[in-house]
Image 1 (tube, one colour):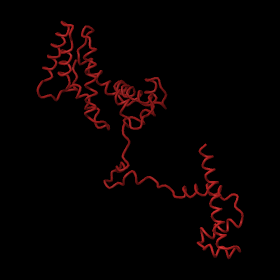
Image 2 (cartoon, helix red, strand yellow; image 1 turned 90 degrees about the vertical axis):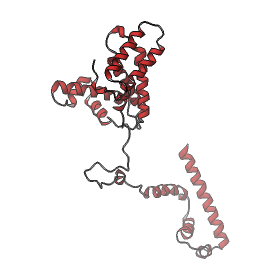
Image 3 (cartoon, one colour; image 1 turned 135 degrees about the vertical axis):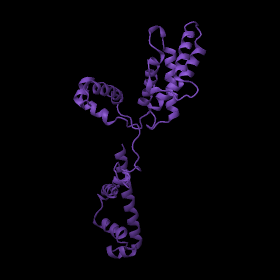
Length: 269
């Protein structure tokens, strides 16, 4: 069986030479019960095939070396589980085994933001169905046709297609997808935090601290905190001494602090 998409880049061995050596190793494997050394040779000979499969999954946010290691692991599994007595050539069995291993690794480890498992598993099924239906219909299949082929709803198809290939989120520093080379970065389209939110939160908290203050207490706080009036002047306005104003302010702050701490504790409970 020919596999043109996985042509080798190994300059030391041609495809024909590799196929011949693989066949020879498999023949030797059938004559002995000790397969360890032969299996290691089968893996070594066919490592370029695993590398070629891994390269198809590069540039999706995962390290090329990691991809190659996963592909090699799939090749080892294929070598250990291949049974020539059942018919078929080795590559016809090894290629989908290695490819499946890499895809499973993407499914389990390749997502920065992980979609539901059902979406991850549906994506490769959609890809296969699209290829088959395009060949059968002579055009790109519609959502309803894909849904009928896979026996799922159109909504599930839309969700899977929306997440397709989204292994790594777009950088906020990247320019927007326009024809303009000087397009601003995506971050420029984001709004800023409204400082009014913090002020609103503070007002809500302070309302609880001020709820039981009478008119004189509120006047003292307004003169001292907001108008910057001295304690001596406050005393003259309300008819007490500066020392009494100082004590009044200390008492007010202690009461307010106690109410605020109580409100925070109640909110956390």
